[in-house]
Image 1 (cartoon, helix red, strand yellow):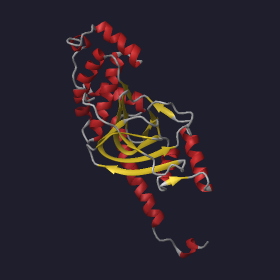
Image 2 (spheres, helix red, strand yellow; image 1 turned 90 degrees about the vertical axis):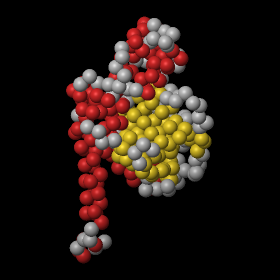
Image 3 (cartoon, helix red, strand yellow; image 1 turned 60 degrees about the vertical axis):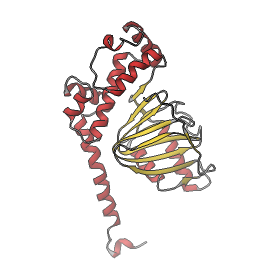
Image 4 (cartoon, one colour; image 1 turned 180 degrees about the vertical axis):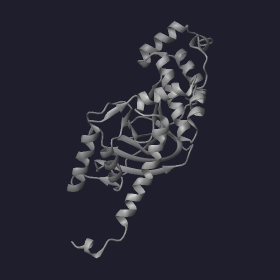
Length: 285
């Protein structure tokens, strides 16, 4: 992350009385939403493309059909890899009580996918409106039973470990061993390993695997081939990347992105059929 300090922009809810407000935006590749925060909890859903959410605590990669949970008052930036279709729900604080008070990536199942898209057809949802109350209850029920996905990259707070983090964030393909990266940091290899375990909750090796996986996913979203993405992200072989991708997302990178690209086409065909003229007999009420 950049060492330059940014002032976070406060984005106040446009409709404080509604339980949920929504936002629908499509962004071009490379677009970055600058540092900002909200007075509401937030579900940011990628129905297409890959987003990277960054806070002072770390980074979360959000591939297609995943969402990131961002609690209220959390300053964050969002960077787009490839064309991104972003669908956002802003929830009154604490109506989704089961979700953590820190950021996390969520697995969006088909039902939740459809609920989010349906909710985004409204500017806001209010409990006093019966149909909207049912939709709110369904959304909250789905969110509170959702599966979390380990696609986070937390930051250590110690300046010595953070120096190594910033070096690798600037060049994820850097394959130098930790012993070499420690030179000039003011800490030994053993000290850095301990700092990662204590402050980040994972080993340095695990953290580095996460960094490489997230970088490769961003490159794939930009249209790069699997082999190129794997090597540019620092993997020794494409098969090592494919193994990690399958372990986290349950399929291979090729199948995942082929499925992702096919879904919008299938949905478009379904919408086209739904909107096509019907025989007179089908119009009877």
